[in-house]
Image 1 (spheres, rainbow, N blue to C red):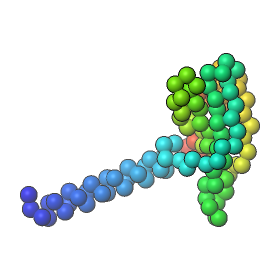
Image 2: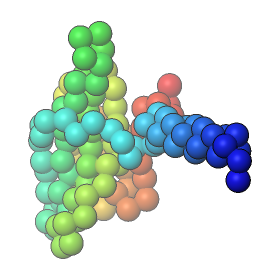
Image 3: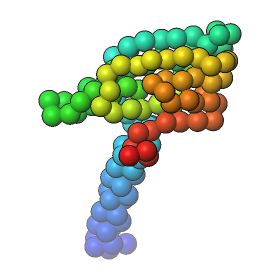
Image 4: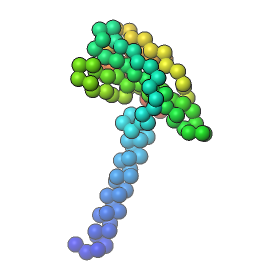
Length: 120
């Protein structure tokens, strides 16, 4: 393999990695900032806990955001299922053992996710 093709392979690899990072950061809930724990509310049967975190999402020029994470108390697995920008409070109400309402958004914790970027 000559030097030119090796350089192209390395350059292409870097571009793919950067594109993947931008995609994950911009269009999924996977690489969101952690934030500071704001509130935790257990499900009626105590199988799950919904945690909300206050995130300083924009530094000095932006606002706050709320990140919501569901925790399965049986196995400790956590997953972010809620992300709302330009808000600094969270009103959480469990509707039943698998449905939760946060700031007026109803989510089934097993199937639903809310990302404000998809609802602008």
